[in-house]
Length: 280
Image (cartoon, rainbow, N blue to C red):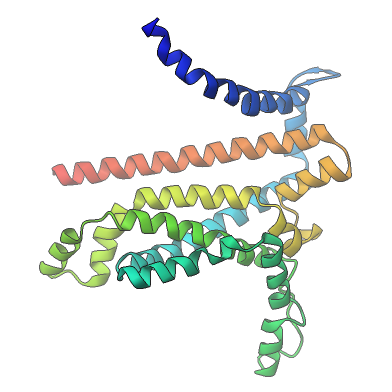
């Protein structure tokens, strides 16, 4: 009886996992492989060989990578600054960082429409300064999707990194400064390598979030700059093509898994290099 206790403990979780995750996933995959013409991957081959579909897929990957890189570039120094200040100011800055996450995504997107539109804040300011004579097309472009996505997911990167950087012992940084390292060199050679796991986790969250986001690409990018999530919605709800929507969904899932695996491999290799360097 005691040998069966572990299985009884995990049974409820296993049942829930099968019912709410495995079965819906199988229900999505099954009609894309077993079609009226027989079993095969023809639906996926057709999707990936169609120029229009491939263009949307590559645009989604490109935007997701750009958003992830920008979030890392701005998130790392910001998190380092927040992690190093007093508790009072840290709480205030963390609250300000989390504020975009507390706002509805539709409201955020409409705010950026007012900022980036042809009669928006940016174009009006540039025209008043005499920099441009005609309004720039900033809205309904990949640029507007990137801006809106960075605003949406940068807080996720910052909060992930703050938690990692708070665990870096101050004695390590003080030792580097005592040995004559400049603040920049201390950050580059000490802090940055130690927070690589947080960067990897934050990058996975930002990339996955951007890849699967619907509201921001739809409102800021429009149909001319369609992303995979908006393409999936169009296939399922507008056209009623559930097979194509299932193909898109599975491609997004596989892409996310590949990226996650790749980033984890990078993190593992970096950890091994650091261990080899420390032993040397």
